[in-house]
Amino acid sequence: MNYEINMHLDTIAVIRLYGELDHHATEQIRDQISRTILQGSLKTIIWNLEKLNFMDSSGVGLILGRMRELRAVNGQTIILNPSNTMKKIFQFSGLSAYMMEKKEEEAIMHARGIVNG
Amino acid sequence: MDNEMTLSFLAVSENESLARMAVTSFVAQLDPTIDELSEFKTIVSEAVSNAIIHGYDEDGKGLVTVHAVREGDVISVAVKDEGNGIPDLKKAMEPLYTSKAEMERSGMGFTIMESFSDNLQVESEPGVGTVVTFSKKFHTVKMPQIS
Ligand SMILES: Nc1ncnc2c1ncn2[C@@H]1O[C@H](COP(=O)(O)OP(=O)(O)OP(=O)(O)O)[C@@H](O)[C@H]1O
Ligand SMILES: [Mg+2]
Image 1 (cartoon, rainbow over the protein chains, first blue to last red):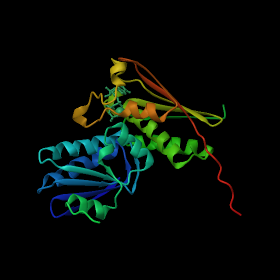
Image 2: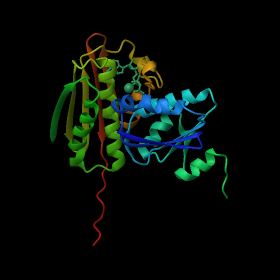
Image 3: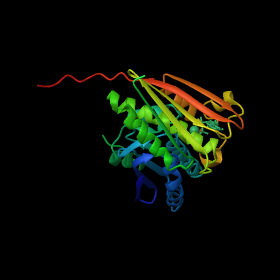
Image 4: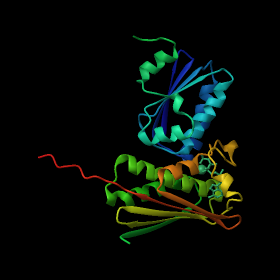
């Protein structure tokens, strides 16, 4: 399991996940992701799952946990590029509304409130 | 029965990927689609992590056993632990119910397992352990050869 966090303007964090996100992996990465997020004036987390090969309910717990941390600042969550199986898992878990059919760049623009076209 | 395998391992979280890898190789015989395979791996991952997290509280001592059987295009799997057991099974199987919210579990494991499998059964007794049994039929369609 690997991940990459890129900050945009201090308010948007793009988290790219690589490999397999299970219980073992979430325990490895949760604290550090959480710490990075809680620094600064974060408003939006964009989870890019394009390079994630596998995810189980642990991924739901990880995303819901960070949503909880963002609640105080009325933050926003965007999920990009889930696989078909991940889509179903998010649907069962009530996270459908957070999935977005956009490219990463477009999602960042969207989060900044810039509407294109 | 066309094939059978048994895998036992200690209740440590590293072994969740081991279990997924083993069952992935086991179903490879059926030439599954990407979606069939990922749903199947997800069910196994949910059952195995439940055994490790809830059955044994990740004690690194208890044994989790994954037993898989192939009959034609149907794979049946039993995931067994001899750990804590489930006091109220009906409640445990409700969507969003978790006894470990502080660990950021979401309570979706059983719902996911039920949705992705063809039939799921859970037997559990407090102090004795838990067995989760499910089967999944693979509908692999062979692609026509392009000549
Ligand atoms: N093998 C087991 N041994 C003991 N208790 C279990 C076992 N499997 C499940 N349970 C109980 O059933 C509850 C629901 O399980 P389920 O997998 O649906 O959710 P979870 O594991 O809590 O969260 P998630 O799977 O979303 O991470 C658990 O919280 C636990 O109390
Ligand atoms: Mg679970």
